[in-house]
Length: 312
View 1 (cartoon, rainbow, N blue to C red):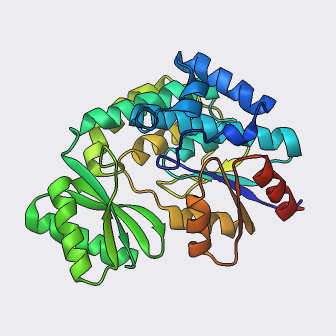
View 2: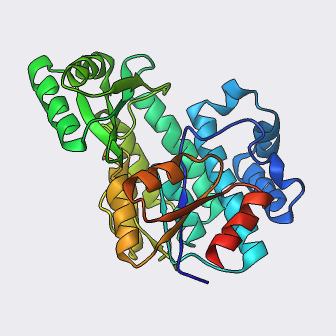
View 3: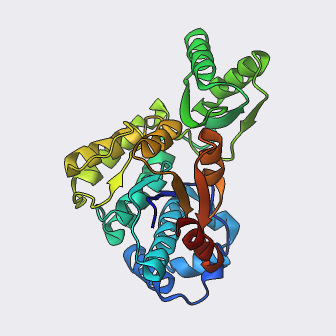
């Protein structure tokens, strides 16, 4: 089998019924049971029935997306037996990657990400922060525009997700993000779309949440991963557990350097990248970052068969 990498999606790819395609697959069923035990709630029912409003609450979304990504990964391992050569995850997805790599136990990661979600939500009152996706403009121009708006207005606005060469997400105070959207559109951005999120994730406004997360990480068992996990904040594959804790802490208020993450995976001689978990967002980003990469999604038995075919 050719070398391949798995990447895990983050918040925003969730949907009611997103694991229904697996039916009663043992690996998925067991993962849902493990998640329900770890969180003290019926995770399978929440995913299967919603309602959407509950699924979209940050404190539910983060553990549910972690569960779904690992369920798909375990189904892959059960059906194929083969391991990726590298792993990565977008924002929250990095936790899924660390579980897949054996650095975190799922039972430890689930309450950790629920705590992370709660800390992020409490760091900035709902309605006072914002995020927006800036399309059709290079990252350096977006970054420069944010710096100028912040300096002129005194508001916080920063480039926080470098998703592909022409899509950068900005975050900060509501007023700062709105002003930056105006300025960037005037400078040639094709679109600046407000995102339906409850907090300005990965901006410096998340530092209070990160400080709380740091304490929780100190008490969370982390082992050296047995598969390389390229992280968001440094674009490095750390083996030392304390370095992994530090990267997760800084990731909460630091940018997701996704373009560089994919470039780092490619530099390892990997030409096939599979999005593992609900949704198809990352696969699209990967293709826009490097058109020579073969991509696939793994979210049900049919796509699992497609991935096997691609990697044969």
